[in-house]
Length: 370
Image (cartoon, rainbow, N blue to C red; front, side, top):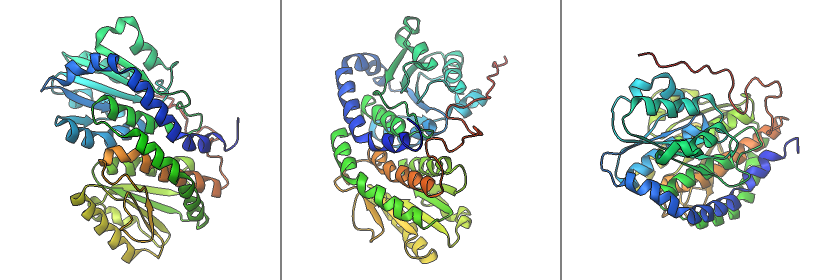
């Protein structure tokens, strides 16, 4: 299958994939609980969410929400940071659960991060969420020799995206982490709402792409800041860098980054479900409406009270932001897909000369000097 097929299919399949994921995790619950329950019972356990690129942004979406749900310390640290600066990010020798997100499990930093945690920490456990049964990370962490210090969970078939950009892989891993770590997402509701809004999102994204905007900004607060970062990356990847994309927090954007705006900018503001946080998101949306042309400020959220240019996910307004983030991400995926097509690119392979690769290459892992 070639030529602008896989990415569209992998975006559209997500509601079905999420339902399959919920069933597989429920069936595997005894094994999951046997591994995680003793760890989560410890008051001093530090949870570190790690991955590279989109997989790192999954951790940034999850960390604030999991901290709130679990009432414990949860840090998002990219493997790219952990591998280059391990003594800074693993400075405290605390009991640590390293949660690794990896679509392929073949990125050089993935196994290196696991090894560094084992080397620098007295007590390290590993939860691996991946989409590739043949990846080095999954095979290594599933071996009998890994003992009782690791649990590797495989996402449903089809989530090891064939397309260049991560789509169904990242949303599945986020929902899996929320489920197994105790945030209890209503996956069935998310899937039903996502399936209902996907056709409208695709239509809106195509209309937007016809306007040929050359700058996009994504803003959000808390877990939705990580979502904004992933949204900006999707657009950058699928347009091969021909469209400038930027992300920030709703409050942080005024402190200099607002300089990126021009009359050709489209700004998306993710609206929090938290009443307090939502006020700040609405403030920046209103401010941007005074700056940008009509129709260039779009809010994405779970209520219909933010004006005509709201892309809404009705029925999810009572859920935490980290839980609704996978559904909201569908909007950004559709925008990236439609914009790539409008530019005449192949979203499945936006870099035919392989200037950027689906699985990163060229990384040398250096041994930690004593």
